Length: 83
Ligand SMILES: [Zn+2]
Image (cartoon, rainbow, N blue to C red):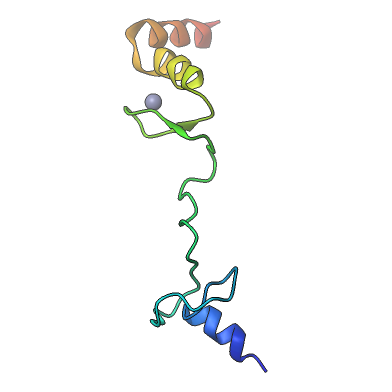
């Protein structure tokens, strides 16, 4: 009882499929699947090279970059904030 769970927790076997990964047990759960993306809040595949945020589309990145990383966008936001 619990042996298999221990194997998972030790990282000996894939936490999703139960397959032995590489014979090593690093001491934490892991998987042969690609490691899940490390970002969580912004869940897009498209990354802003300037600040590292992720977006769902190239358009969203472009819009973001325009708003956040151009003098025009910053002036625009400043104006909005002043009402
Ligand atoms: Zn950015």
